[in-house]
Image (tube, rainbow, N blue to C red; front, side, top):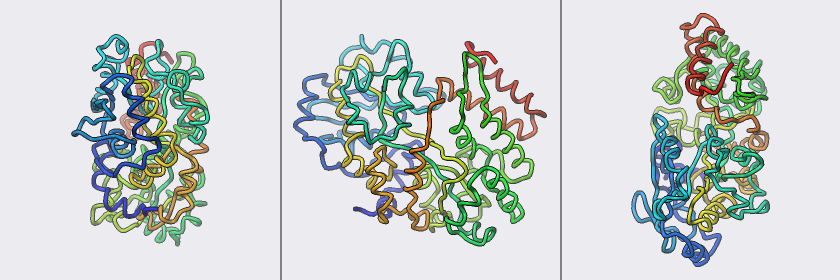
Length: 459
């Protein structure tokens, strides 16, 4: 199998932009898992235009590079047999992508044939808004599109739970995004006397130990994370109750723990309050930074830690990974078939090839460095040294990702996750920075903001 190292070196500049929210055109088509003639024939019985709505070019690159028989025409279109494929890309900024979906999906059944939405993509934070909509705007993957339990058997359960509403699966994903804790080897050696993941892991195995380690790092002039926001998703992925219960805004105990732990770390100077993706946050990827660790999935490690820049820690393989205090998930993209499509057979085949066919998914791992949504493919890669991450100094972390993916639960997601998360982090940043004197004051600001955003909610 082609070594991941060569993939990263050849594709990093383009692929990193995709993983972080922009475009790519990497890789070559996979060996067909179904014959081109079969795919073309199925598509030929239906509409002549397949419209795919998305917010960036990530899925476009996967379809171009891995779907049997796909022919690229230009930057936003292609062909599958005699069907024209159009990508309608609306960036997520200022909620523009969701606003576009809200505009077109309800009337999709009555739209002109060539204008119909056939496929649309969603993220976990707002997936239920569309997969749980009444009347339905996303097709039943099994009942409407014909994928079977056998087809879906090797997918990680949480990826199905994200897009399941009232027992009906209304989307599928080709990727999983379990996360790990990534730490600097040189700082670990200086502060803890070793950079060996087997010895560092016990020092960061739960939040009490993590916070204890933060104190030792501070004494040596380092912060354990760049920002309190680095750990939020880890805590929030391990809640036992959703953001909203019976119409009332709910603060889970693990969210409260994040507030208490983070406030203590910020007050002690052991972390900051910077925004993710900001200049200060990105500065921690460089050798002259003072940040010990980040939390992230494979896409963050491989594509967002400045490995292509001289002077970065990743450039010289200076990071390592351990499971960290709790397992978590960050990111992921789900494919939904739109109610009203005139291409259900082609939509179903795209879903099946890109999310169920092991040979295609293994090819995605090799060419695109995705952690794919297929247990056998990932378990095989976890045992293969050719999948070592150069950024991690030759460590292969895929076994940790596999273990994490099996533990992830998305049972407590809700339609309100994106809005509640954004407003809570905003209010707590003001609390950590001293702009609110008490947690209760910050909480009231959070409630007010959420109730303005979702008038149907109370607290």
